[in-house]
Length: 244
Image 1 (cartoon, rainbow, N blue to C red):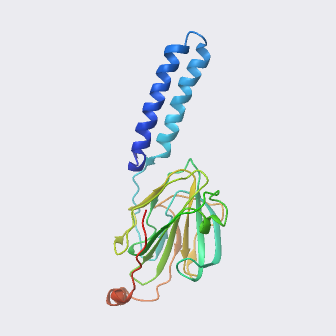
Image 2 (cartoon, rainbow, N blue to C red; image 1 turned 135 degrees about the vertical axis):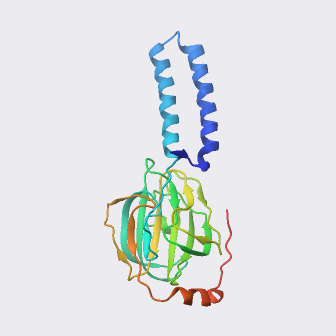
Image 3 (cartoon, rainbow, N blue to C red; image 1 turned 45 degrees about the vertical axis):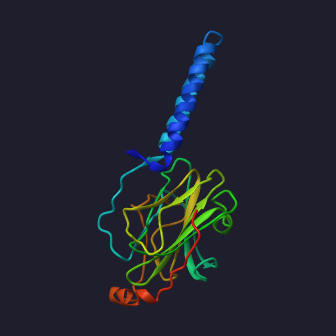
């Protein structure tokens, strides 16, 4: 198990601050109340281990991937499976599958499918609890659209929560993407939405616990051929979006 690069600066800063606080506590207060002093020292260790656990970065590879599979992009609990109108980017009917991540889940995010990134945008917004339905459209969020070799488009949205204040997204328009690679990281409680075609076969249930880059959450229908995708790639308009 390694630590995610997004947490290294935070962990170093936190370690220094806690170390200074512990030295001051032990030096000046141990003679007044040993119990309180050692409680504070132990508490600082627990706080540091909590942050180490939060920024853990497990190495995961999915064996046996097929190009109609959609993998879970994050660890967490399925909180939404419903048909909806995606009004922000796709402007069409989709099946929304949302995964809520608590502060105890791995917060690295993975690409759910192989394909090409055709759209990326970051939107500023509120920091409501990520398990609320309206957080999908009103919270701080990053959105990418991935197009498969069969010209199926999948929208993935990283959403900040009440505690999250930073969404990191590595995806950029025009780049290829594959499962087993991380798309980004969300710092503290948050969620990830997927907007899948209406005819996708959903393989998970509400309240089910899923693992990023491990759980198959859906299978897509194939409506074209890989050759058609290659021949018509030049006709797909690229959208220029502001980044963080």
